[in-house]
Length: 314
Figure 1: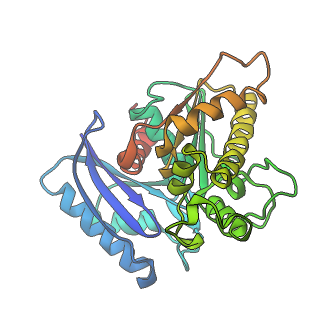
Figure 2 (figure 1 turned 135 degrees about the horizontal axis):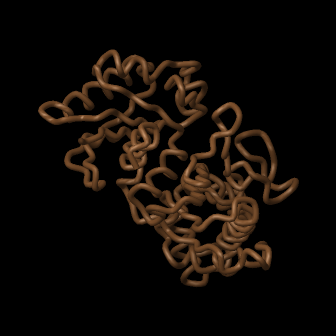
């Protein structure tokens, strides 16, 4: 039977009809329009779900949502990009409008499930995933079980400390991985260093505010010193985090996904090499670090994988 996967983001959403092989048979995408309120967002999602499920046999709906999620009730406890979504019963509301069973999970956890079900970690029981985007999310699977912690909101890997007294993170702490290696962190480094590096090729045709992480990586490849300085901060932080995660969880694979992972081997190779400096000798050779291959389908496939995880189908 097919599954409907919903990738819910603060700016956009995507809904897909997914078959058992992971093929997306049809999809609907649109603007989330959070400012219209949670009920308007729910109605928009429900309409898309009903449109895709019409005339198709659907087992259930999986929703990957940012924020702290009560996965047992499908409730969004809190999500910084969704003002007013406090203890919001997302799953219950979608079920009432669609008459389909709905499962809700944190989007980074859903990503980890998607990698294990359909991606580069397919079939593996010990998996660590990092999503590198505006922020940094993560998911951990050990012995085939998704780790959620005592209250269901654990595995916030983006907030592990990799530099005591480092840059301030959006969470309020200092030195989090997210404050050093996310797209937001890169943009902050660019703006903070503009006065000192006005001669950088990054600023020949762009203002500091317009420079993107892709620009930084592209100019680092060409040898720009300021771009390389930022790139090395990012790589060192990710290498330290990955090395620590390997020591803690002893995974078979660490998967890097999200928009920044589009930098490919240029980002992956130095992380692989520098992570060895943080990995216990007994762990060396027991893991691999890989880039996600799910691309733009990662959110939908991750959401669909929630259903398989809850129902024990895969």
